[in-house]
Length: 68
Image 1: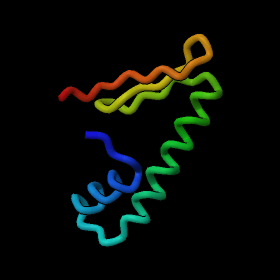
Image 2 (image 1 turned 180 degrees about the vertical axis):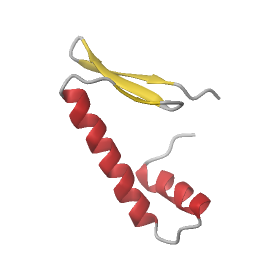
Image 3 (image 1 turned 90 degrees about the horizontal axis):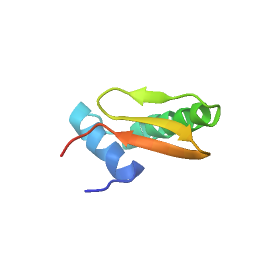
C-alpha cells in the first residue's frame, strides 16, 4: 500500500496518540527536505531499517530496507 505525506502523518499521529496530524506532517516535510538537500550535496543518507539515498550517475538511488 502506498501512502502520501498526509496519510502517513495520520497513521503516525494515531500511533502516538496525537490529535494534530499537521504537526507530524511538518516533521515529515522537514525530514524529506533535509534528505533531499544532503543527497544533492553528494552525501549518502541512511535511516537504518528504513532506506538509504545517494546519487549515482546523476540520479538519486534509493535502497529500501523494509521487507514485506
